[in-house]
Image (tube, rainbow, N blue to C red; front, side, top):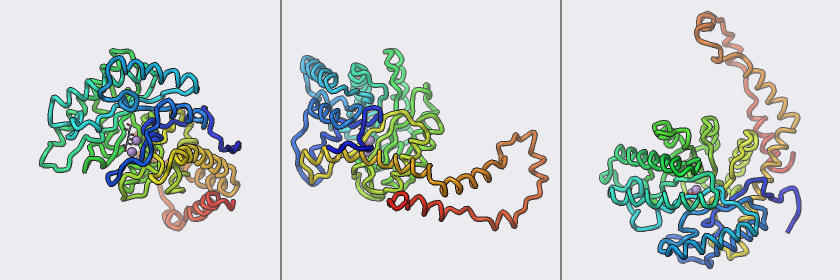
Length: 388
Ligand code: GCO
Ligand code: MN
Ligand code: MN
């Protein structure tokens, strides 16, 4: 193994899911290509690679039909494995998509009994997550949606979703768990259309909840990129609202199926600006790689994938430092900052509305002046391409 500046360490807060490195390569067209890795093996190996922790769905650790005794044994053994490798479980979540019972959704199934079962399953999964000290609890509504709008009233579905989140916030408070709840938006796959498709939709719902302070976002690169959106803008908006509780990193080509590729492996420029945003903002949460190795890989390839995800992040981080240290970029940014320092609308309405109304603007000069973004972008690209 190489020892260099790109070696991941626990303080970088890199995490993986049991379901990500454990992905056996099954897809809609083909069987698994790799044996399922045991949770204990995953933890040991990720710990050795420099990860901070590992996250799980309830059923990644405890199979759906496990007895109480089996559950206790699995929990005990996993705790030992975590302790031995110094790994943490910072996030937990519920599998509300695998069981055929959730074929029409969990919190938004048209069947009220299914909606109640989803609550029961989530409460039990929160108990499990709390046992491991998880601090963030993720809600990814993979099956919450429709294939046909003839089937479901989306207004009703929003009410059901809101009811479920309100109920589970109360549970969180009553149990003293102190989880931060994080909604993970996705536009489609596995449903034809999923409710709360974007960061903005989820943010809007949050402010209608009984405890908006407890609920935030877990955005994912691939989910916005599938729709051709600029992921960093969504993340920035969540961040600015104090709602970036967690983040799922991976890579994705726009307009494709859900690829879940290794972080940094597709849109290099977007990956750079995402790392820049996270680093510049001092984001202190977990950086979770929600992706998996290509189906071509055997187990060795899985560990190449895991190590590569963290390594690429740290390489981008170094590029961010190079961007900030570059004197010419510095000059261009200072010139922009000077223009930005003009008071704009920050001045108060009552004090300055008349002044602004009366102001004489030098519009010919304002119209003529460029912003030098071509040069700024070229310099950025030269850093990324390794010639600067
Ligand atoms: C996906 C999602 C999931 C969730 C996971 C945690 O596209 O399948 O990203 O991997 O992140 O269920 O909630
Ligand atoms: Mn995803
Ligand atoms: Mn995800």
